[in-house]
Amino acid sequence: MTGRTHVAAGSLLLATAELVDPNFAHTVVLVLDVDDDGVLGVVLNRPSPVPVAEVLAPWGALCAEPEVFFRGGPVSPDGALAVALLHDDGDVPVGFRTVTGRLGMVDLDTPVELVDGGLGEMRVYAGYAGWGRAQLDAEIAEGSWYVVAGESADAFRADTTDLWREVMRRQPGQLSWHVTRPADPDLN
Image: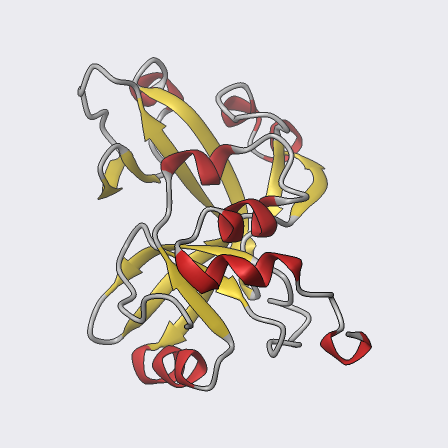
């Protein structure tokens, strides 16, 4: 069983053992946007050593721990994309675009004071992952990705070292068995 095959905003793509591309090996990708042309997402488990405050000073204080850029993917690595979770009160600040539920994207050109107080968590990504719709469908069909439901908390874990395993462990049925697979299946 390979999990769901329907990719929607808010779902996760978990790299399978067959995916050896160094950009995506052992990654968890949060899908942010899906349309007829393609899919956009960010890699959740690749923190960089660069503090957000060093590059985007006013945004650093709003970031979840660790307050560093995460490597969102190989597309536009010099650009920045922010993912955030709204506070429970439901007020949607200027510059926030909903992805699913309270999870969304923040326009980093928005003055910080317009969103400060409206966000519960935020993380900034350098670059993103992008696929043409047919390209991602083909990668899923060939067994490179598991498509699973995401939880808002997945995007804001302080320690992402075991994120792939934690997400896999909560999957129903036989899919959760993949959590015990070795990094190199040929060694099994």
